[in-house]
Each structure stands twice: as structure tokens, then as C-alpha cells.
Length: 270
Figure 1 (cartoon, one colour):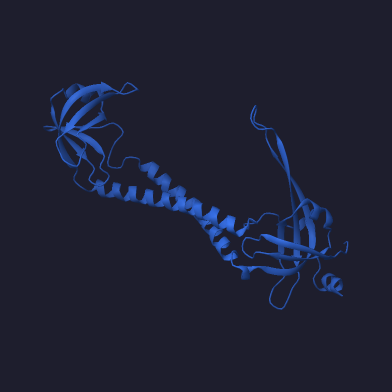
Figure 2 (cartoon, helix red, strand yellow):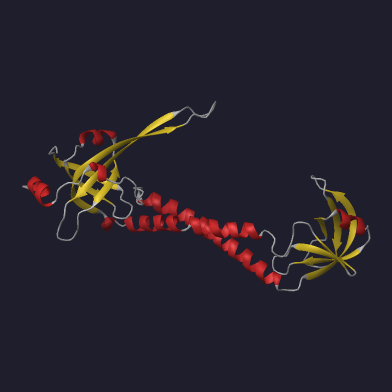
């Protein structure tokens, strides 16, 4: 009677119409909760870091710099050959000695013993210019909007990284509750074995092949649920036992679609 019900009132869809792609990863709830939570925290860190850096740059662009008095005490070059100045600062709360990369013209203009004012961004506390009398020398590669594109990159990375891991963690949290398990009767409409090969890294990792076994099920309609097409990963021995038309009873998590158990009820080959 059950098979007659399936074939007349709920005909099985063709296996070619099954979509094997799904947002539901089929992960264990605890693993999804931990993995999604860690990625969400990383995304939040990127967003907070990017937002704070961007807001500090905006505030610094409209604020007067902190002018810290100092004296040039030495000249040198960095590893790339760019000229550097060593300065002694006369202000508490700032390092006594700092080394700044400057342009060749600035290195020539400011001799040892020259009194200067170091312009600091008031919020980000980075030096971006030197003043000597009425002459102002900008430091190469620095400004109140230093690393502006890197800041936007942090914000964009956080925005792109946050949504799905957060959803994954939320699904995992919901599915961790024992009363969230679903139990339904369904019929096998398709099976799939996908070969996944890891390319060999010379001298390190040998080439390996892994086969993913999946099953597509069409659930039966009940008084409270509508028919659905669900796909799950299964073990090889279970995959070999399942044929199109096999009636099964499944227990799974509703959000992540993790398959806890699959019990074969009877088989009708179609």
C-alpha cells in the first residue's frame, strides 16, 4: 500500500533533475558550531580592526597634528638604501629615540643637531611629517590616511567572511539540541559517487583518491510536512545497498542536514 501511495500520489522525480549542491554542509552540529564560531570571531576582529582604523584616519584628517619637539641626532640608511634620520624626542609619553625614513632632500636639509617638530596623527599616533622653522617635510609613504586601502581590505574581508560562518554556527547551535532531530520516511531517487583526487606534491605527499558517496531522497508528505528533496553523504556499504525506489527511514538534523541514521525499510526497483 505504501508503494502504491508513492507511485500514484507522489511520483518520484527523475534522477537527472536532482541538484547535488546545497548550502547545508552536512557537518556534525558541534563541529559546525565550533568551526563557524571561530571563523565568525575572525571576521568580527577584521571588521572591528578595520572600522577603528578607518574612523581614526577620518578623525585625524580633520584634527590638528600633535607637534612633538625633537632633535636630529644621526643619519643612516635602511636595508633598502633609503635615508633615515634618528631623532631624540623631548616629550613624555613618546619614545625617547625614533628612526624615520625620509627623502634624500630632507636628509640633506636636516643636519645633526637640527631642532624639529614631529607631526603625529593625534588618534593613530603615527608620525607623518617633520617641521623645521617654516619648512615642512612630509615623510615618504605616510599620511593621516596611511594604509587606507589596507583598511578597506580588512573591512571587505570581514564583510565577506562573516555571513556564512555565522549561519553555520547558528545552524550548529540549533541542531545541538536533541529535540531538533527530524525523523521521516523517504524514497531513494538517485545515488552518486564522486571521485576526489589530491594532486601529488613532489617529495612530500603522494597522490590520493577519495570517493564521496551520496544519496538523494524524496521525503513523503505528512500532515505537518511537505515533500522535499534531500541529499546526504553515506558510507560505501550503504551506498551499494541503496537503489532507486528504496524506501528508507532517516534521522537527520534539520538545519545542517547531518544524517544520524538511515534504515532501509523495503526496496522497489523503478
